[in-house]
Image (cartoon, rainbow, N blue to C red):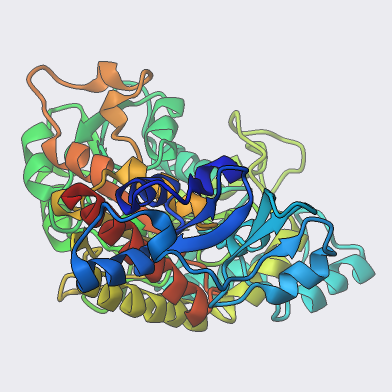
Length: 488
C-alpha cells in the first residue's frame, strides 16, 4: 500500500462532511487542511470531528472552523532521524512542507514501522548450537543435532518415532507414502486448509476427497467425513487449523469403524492440546512444519511422527533415497532426498527448548486481542472449545456483517496504518487444480463463509503490548469512522 499525500489533503473551505469522507478513504484518522494556495493551515482528525458533532451536531461547518491550528509540521529537508524523534504515540503523522508552507510529503509511524503478521524469535541458544555445527564441520544431514531434535520432539508429542525432514510439505508426502497410500486410494481432507495438505495426496498418487469444516472449530467436520467414505477410502487427514485441534475422538472412532488410517496435519498447531493430549499423538502419523512463520522454526524444515515402528523404518529408508540402512548404496525402493541438515536441526533444538514460552506468549496475545475485539464489536474471536488448548499459531478473527466494512476493505485500511494482516485460506474447491475433486451435489457453505470473512492479525511472539494496542486502536478507528461517515 503506497499512500500518497493527496490521500490526506482537503481544502479548509470544504465541509466537515467532506473531510470525514477523506478520512474514511485514507483510513489513517487524519487529514491535512490547505488554503486556496495549497498552504497548510491545519490538521483535522476523526476525534476532532466527533467532538465537533457532540458540540453542535453539524457536518456542514467548514473545515477551518473545526481543524486544529496548533500542530506539528516540519520542513521537507528535515533529517530523517529528527523526524523519527518527533513521531510518537500522540504525533503519528507529520506534514512536511516547503519554504512557502505547502505540504509536499508526510511522515508517519506507519511509514517507519510496520507490524508484521509473523516473525521468528531467535535469541536463545540458536547461535550457540549453529556455531557448534560450523566449528565441528557437521553441517549436512548427519550430525548429533538431527537425532537430538527428533528424540526431543517425539517425547514432547508423546509419539514413539520421529523423523526430521526438509520441510512440512514433504513431511506429509513421506507419511502418506510410508503408510502405503497411493494409486486407487482416497484420502479425506478439509476444504479449508493450506494447499500442501491436498497437494501431497495428489503427489502420492491418491485421490483427495474434500470435506467441509465444522462451523465452530473451523476444522474437519466428522459428520461430513462419515458421508464421504467409500470402499476406496484409505485415510483421513485432520488439519489442526490456525492452532485449534480437530474433533479427534469422533474422527478416530470413524477411522476405527471403517478401518482407516489417520494422518494428522499439525503444521499450524504445535503445542496445542486435545483433551490434554498433544496434537499429533492420536493418529497413525502426524506431520509438522518449521517454516519461518511457524510456532518454532528451522527456517525450512518439518517432522513426521509415526506410531508403528515398521512404518517408521520404511519412512527412514525412503527419506534417504530408498537406501538400505544395512547395505550402503543399495536401493530398496525409489526414494527421496527429504533429509534435514544438522544446522537446521540445531536451530530446531534451540527453538524446542522454548516451546512452552512461545505457546504461552501466543495465548497471552490472544487474550489481549479477544478482550479488545469484544470492546470494538462486529468481530468474531477465533475458537477455543472447552476440550481444547488452542496454540493460536495465527490469531484469526471473523469480520461480521455489522462491522461496516468487508474483510478486504479492513485489510486495506490496516495496511495503510502499517499493520500487516492476512486473509484466511481460500477453500480448496474454488481453486483451479482442485475443482475436479468435488463430488456431484457437494457444497461447502462453512468453509466459504469463513474464508470470505476471516482475517489474521499480527501474531508474533515478539509483538509488544503497545503494538497490540495499536492494532486494536486502528480496528476501532476504522469501524467508527465508517459508521460516522455512513450516518453523515
